[in-house]
Amino acid sequence: MDTPSAHSHKLRQHYPQKHNHYNFSDFFQFNKPEGSITDWNGSRNILTSEDFIIGLLEGLEEEVGAASAAVMYSIGLEWGKQDSLFFDQWFEREYNVSPQQANLMFLLETWWWPFTAQGWGRWEIDMADRTQGFMFINLFDSAVARTLGDVGKPVCYLYAGLFAGFFTEMVRKQLSCIEIQCYSMGETYCKFLLGAKERIDAAAFWLNEGATASDIEKRLRSGDSL
Amino acid sequence: MLSQIQTLVREVDGRYATDAELMFLQDYLKTARLRFSAYQKIQKAEKDIIQQVKQKLKLADPNLLVRGKVDLSVKWHRDTVRVLRYCAHALLISDEEGLEESFLLWFQSIMRSFKAQHSCDITYKVMQDIVRQHLTPQEAELFCPILAQARLLLGQ
Image (cartoon, rainbow over all chains, first blue to last red; front, side):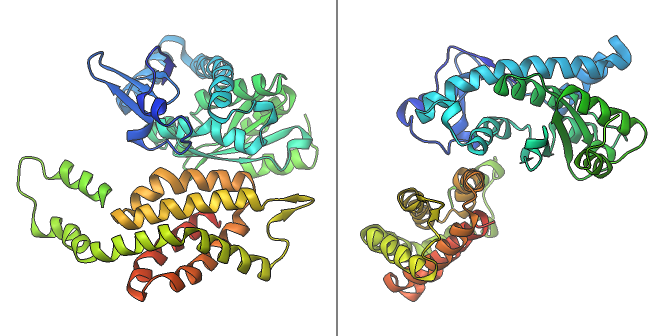
């Protein structure tokens, strides 16, 4: 997890034009006297164990019960919105081009790379249906799902919120996101659907009725709605 | 090798390394001279290698580096020089693992963003043939697998 910090990254100061800076020793800077970790973009990072993730989720569930999913989604949403603004700054600083002028896929890959370096997993975006107003994101090695293991239900609400928040801010249009397939359901990777609220509500309904990710994809592509 | 040295230092904690654990250093020393000479040849011939690859690509498919009305030659040149230099560096220090982790995986996502997998696939296939003209067979035997690794990752 990261929060803005006053610590600047020394390697970045020496090599501001180095873009492939995502391996562990390049991306993170360990500020030993302060006991802090800063990343390439100047964010403060903390290292957490799987026990921490389990503790966070189980503690929250104990406090608010079934609403914990909505709480995690909201945390992700706010995080994504704030990170979008932060990303605009560092993208422009690093590439000397505004995000609006950049190739969209390049922009999105660049946004996600720090998350990959931080251990949130690799992703793959499927924008084939973008003109229809929705898109899919495949996430490999979700930190949350990997930690919880096969619990038979989707668990990556934090990620769904993060994607909704980031893309909402990026396209200046209210978007929602739902995880329609999860590693914690015994699948090999997680899959998220991003789109307008009514579409996501429809997907949530189908999911509750027992539809699979592939069913939902088919229904959306055939123009089905509630 | 640098990645292997880091692993060695981490794993051989408070004891002496076994012969098997040191084998990679022996292997490196056996090929070090070849690596240095190949590295220097690639460095000197960089311009020619890139030019020859480009010529061969244009012969094979004149439209490979054109998208619509946009000529991608300059961008291709910049990317290809960058890959060649990183690969040469990996050859010098015998660190394919580090090459993948610090460069190729990131560059793969960038090449995919620009849908450049096809041109990468052909570029690093052709480059293996071209560098054989500049290196001895023993040197090429060390370098071509690194280019093949670049082709595998960037070409798909």
